[in-house]
Image 1 (cartoon, rainbow, N blue to C red):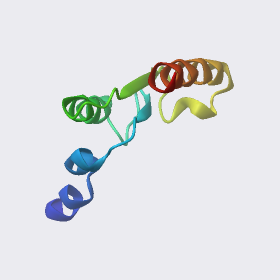
Image 2 (tube, rainbow, N blue to C red; image 1 turned 90 degrees about the vertical axis):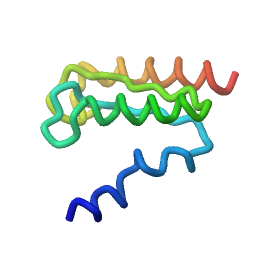
Image 3 (cartoon, rainbow, N blue to C red; image 1 turned 90 degrees about the horizontal axis):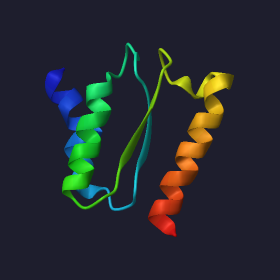
Image 4 (cartoon, rainbow, N blue to C red; image 1 turned 135 degrees about the horizontal axis):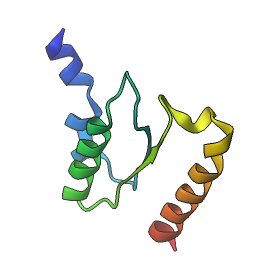
Amino acid sequence: MRAFLENISPLNSAVEITKPLFIEQGMNDPIVPLSESEAMVAALRKNGDPGLVLNGQGRRSWVCQREELRFLIVGGDSFHEGVFC
């Protein structure tokens, strides 16, 4: 099982990602720990990608929380502006 999970892990394919990547991460996500997103961004930056992790305070994928949706929109807009403009 471990070999299967390592094989499908995005971190092991980071070198193949050629477009800027924006990662939304809930700081207390019980399924995908924050360290996974931070490791992905480190791998992307090593390859020259300006990857960004936007950390939400929510428990999970916090985009569904109305009060933090604006934070996500502003963060995403800033990321895209920095990458594409």
